[in-house]
Length: 534
Image (cartoon, rainbow, N blue to C red; front, side, top):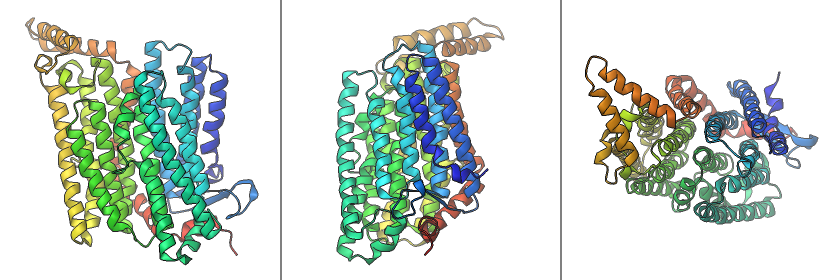
């Protein structure tokens, strides 16, 4: 079976699944089965696609039999296949998390019935963006996922979610308008929007028009990727959404913008004209983002700031360029998607366990919820860049590539990257010390629930005898099981394990990323696969 020829199904399966889920809107059990089944099928397809391009192959599909540059082309190479698989793995884990939460809470027909169709449409848009071989189809992918995200962000219709959704919609529309303007100007200047064709024709333009088109695309993608100063919308928008929605947004939406930046910078504008500006943007994104994280008391808002901060590492890799830097960027994208999503899922578990994610109200969670403590600790130190985890490996690759041929500005960015990593670790340690390690009674605004449960565990331990510690731990596990459904814990644990797998299999994965980077920089594999031979 040639999985590459079936690659359009990565978009079509979620779309058809969304239609089927909508028809079953009054039967939530059927909706869940449809959505989970579609994502499992899509993941199997994408595993086959990654296996097919593992050796460096590239494959283009021309929809409707129309050859590029006149028809719609979908491109499958190592980069797009890798992003597709990671996004589906994350989406499936979040869906299982949401399903377990819904079963535990007893969902009722209403807004919840819209969740599954919108969720599948979101994934279809993400997949379309990753496969797009022309700018207009990339725009269509963005609009599909953004339309679905509007629905998901405002589920429940609370005033806070509507307010955050309004901000998100306005910013997204502005980004889309800028992107559409850029597409119109590119078509006026070159007569094409096909990326392979543009890779040939854009260098023929004068430097002035080229730079204008380049900057317009970067602004549009920069808003979507949440780079500074275009990232101010994100910390107010993401934390208000339901936990599963926040988790999938954190993992995927900004990374589609990063994907577009990497693809266009390597394919359409390979000269490095704006690299100095990108280095400055990367520095500001990293430093200002992490300083914002340190100022937060709400764990979800803190994670939103770390999310934007670490986008700076990805922009840094793009600006440095070269095979090693691009390979490290691709590896770090995979790491960031998995780790940030798992931490937002943990934030949802904390909120459910303690009825709050505010660090001023929490304590004793390590004693009261040992499984939750483990689920937090592993991805947290991974995000902080502790060796030998994937966060450290990705950052080391980026910094090593930058230091190999660094000028004064690059050294400043390297310093900013090291500082950001240390401050990320500081933010994580503060959360651990305050939410998990200290006594619940020592919190600034103690949670009556946690104080009472902590007292019960201590009383159980103080009974005496050799079994006392065991009885205390048993009670803590029972209290944890009452508030945290097993499905939510196992779904989160699956992503934590996926993050560990990025470390365990770092050798072959990074070697694959190096082959992908070489293809991106060479450009010929993409151009030759998409454009018909003359």
